[in-house]
Length: 153
Image (cartoon, rainbow, N blue to C red; front, top):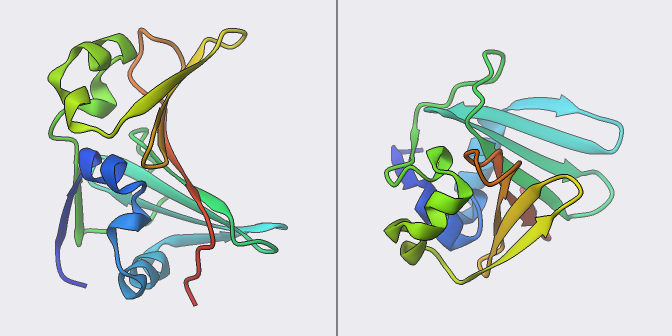
């Protein structure tokens, strides 16, 4: 696979990290990830630059999820042919600051959900991507995408 440059904005606009790739490219990437076989799912993890990618594919159904976070793990396969950047600083920007910035104008339409009992705030984009904040004064905890009918065979 040749070198690929992606930004967090691209991932949000396309509705996920894997959505940025063709099926052969997805297969190649997943084959290079660290695989953990669980009772009910396959968990693929990798580090790209400053980000961890986690892809969960349930064994009995085709719906899973993918997440991106910036809490680097040392025990995850590092992949160097994908340059995932955060040019606009989305993963370093608090909820309130993001909504007041010009960066929000680069992103798809969205709705905001707030879980008051746990102080969690979610920005759900029409593309299918969700940015999850633990509270409005912190940068995002993760970017999450649901994977529907994902086939890698």
